[in-house]
Amino acid sequence: MLHLEPCITPLRGHPKLLGILLSSMGLMLLTACANVIPPCGAKVSPPSSELRNTKWELTRWNLPPNSYGEVRTRQIPIGEASNPIQMTFEANGQRVSGSTGCNRFTAEIDEDTKGFSLKKITATKMSCNPQRMELENDFLYELNDYRSIVRNGDQLLLIGSDREVLSFTQRPVSK
Image (tube, rainbow, N blue to C red; front, side, top):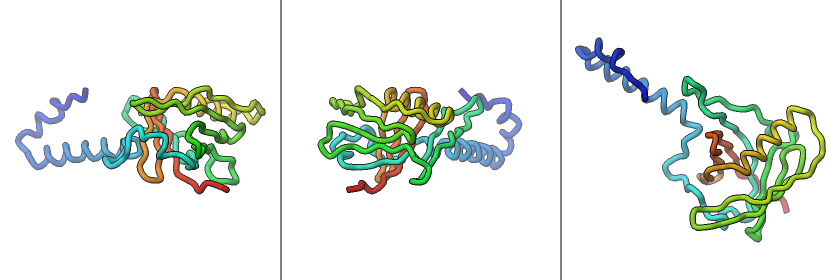
């Protein structure tokens, strides 16, 4: 919990300064969380049927906030030339498949009243450079252990139980 009493006490006689301080702090908190908190109109845990026959590319990876509350991002390869991390929800609604940028993966969709989860995640075992293998392992871990999925139009957020947020952007499905 944030304790402001020592900072605010000298400002009690100056209501305008106190208002500016509190407004500035609120703006800083909102700015720090802007890329983590889903917008109000976003759909939390959409049914998997809404994602059928859609393709998504990982475009941002937010790490958990540090001890100062700052959100940090992880560097990820983006775009076709860089072998991006992508996943496609198949048209039959039973599987997700994609690329970790190094290997291919598939998973079964398991749905209940709370939403869906991915089960039986499997991946090919080709070797890549150590940094890419670390990224792949971390991605597959997040895919296996996420807490919720949020969709806002062409954005899909996968929120991990460790508070990491993977942000995907919808891409055209190749025929």
